[in-house]
Length: 153
Image (tube, rainbow, N blue to C red; front, side, top):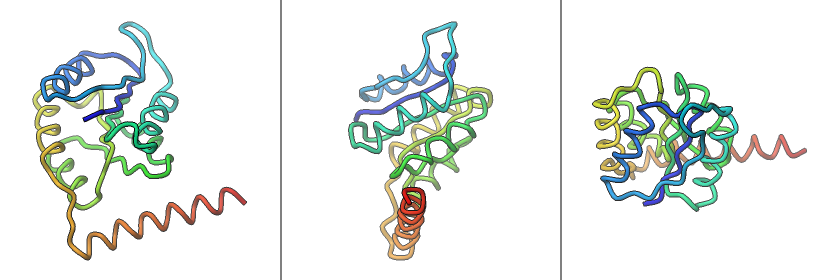
């Protein structure tokens, strides 16, 4: 599976993420700096989210110091449902109920063990297909469409 990854700084967590994704057989498209450099998180997050929204990547993982900014930026892109996941329970809920297609991670708060737990759940949890849940996802799409229509006028 092709995964778009972005970060504003290249920390040991980013290296761990690359190793985990490679071990799981995923193809990574990376948006971010090399070691010792930094980039603006809204810029790299947008690049990763656009790749997911266009269908060129199946899913995305976006990161910044808290993960909050990256999740906010990713959610500005039509078709993206990014969830800030600080633990595996949140990742499971984001997949199940919110049909999240992008994980936002904190470079500060996520350790290697938690990263593995989040990825384990993320890649094995299917989207819920029950009627009520699908109605909620449809409501999110309608909010997004209404917002897009207002901003283009």
